[in-house]
Length: 185
Image (cartoon, rainbow, N blue to C red; front, side, top):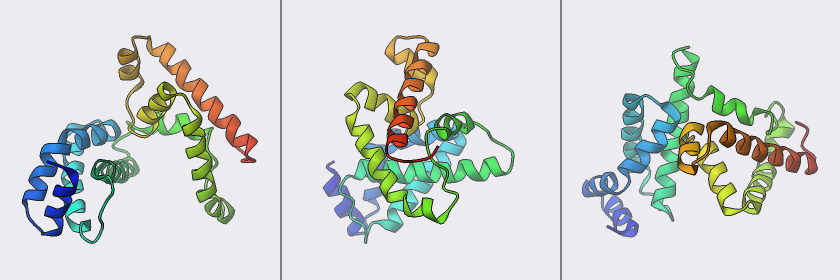
């Protein structure tokens, strides 16, 4: 079923909208949640929360891309769940992923940094757009979707060490770009 039709079902408050969403985007949302949370039961709860959030948000929201909208909802819910679990010292599956980017991004530790957020987003978008398609896909898969290095290496037919070096090179490029733009890292 087309996304526009599914969104219209939401606007009519038809429960069929949820059924069609699960059929079309269930596996995708589970993958997004699983890459952040790693435990299948946590990912499944997160996906169920995504369906509820979509039901509550559409209407009035009318997303241009249902896939991107659901991916963002799922990822944000998964990160919120991860943070809650991490705060309880029960989970550390995403710590390495976040620490990899730590040296590349400025810390939001002041009001000035908060004001620069929109500016930083524009610089990041521009940098990602400047990458070759394979580099862009690799960066987004690792740092947006949280795909494990081992899986990226297997899919690319390289060793984990080689893949880690590629990711390191991308992070260095990002860091250099941000420093050129005047961000103190």
